[in-house]
Image 1 (tube, rainbow, N blue to C red):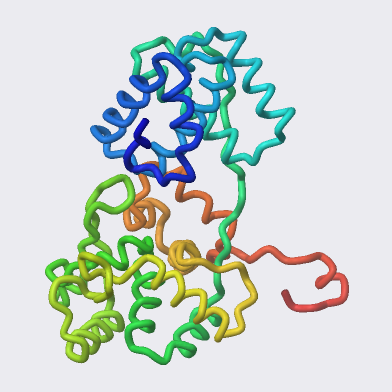
Image 2 (cartoon, one colour):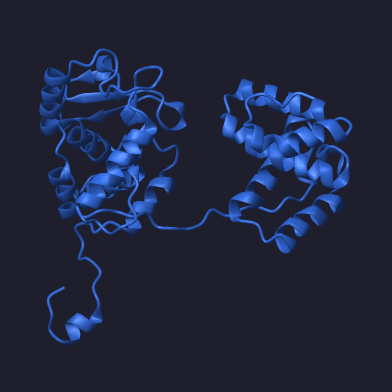
Length: 304
């Protein structure tokens, strides 16, 4: 039997076994692959869902969509308690089954799948001094501009590496972010300093299609390259926080809030679908009101 396409060989062991051994699973997988392609879901989502559906099929020797509520609850108990999986493992098991049931037009509400709460972690945010250290650590103009755009415009990694020259408006000091979060376009302000940096970079590097050139098949700056640049600059700047590319987007939102920008505007700049997502920055920002302080300082007359 051929390995299902789009899935790495090592990851398709369960899928291949289920297709070969469980009657009806191969057809289910093909429908799953087709549906995800139509909906524009990523190959990684297909891989994760299909692997967990395959494991369930092998466990019961039948396609998961044929299981009753009791069998599903037994399996989830088996996965949760006996295997002590990671949160991601259990999540993909639940979400994969939900997707398959919906896809087949079954009333998935009859099957009482547990809800999965998102971990309520606060984002890591850099201070203004740490941002300055990052700029100082960047010897290359390309890296300085990259940090400037990630922090100064609140861009995702994919958005920063996919900036088209045609979407940069230096006269209006705006950047058009295409198909950002939620697959929506949005405009973000560049500001004077970023416009100056972009022009300087374009005069020096002469990019043709994308602002940042790279060795990708479409000539874009690679995702790994962006991640490496941020990590290496943090190391050089001696920043001890757990920083990744998305940290600069969190920092952008937090600093805007501290500078007095209203939450609704920040929501639009970030491309968030709902205000609740943006409200997390209320927990990390120090806006105009008096910042929280320790009573230990006031006990000994220390200025917070």
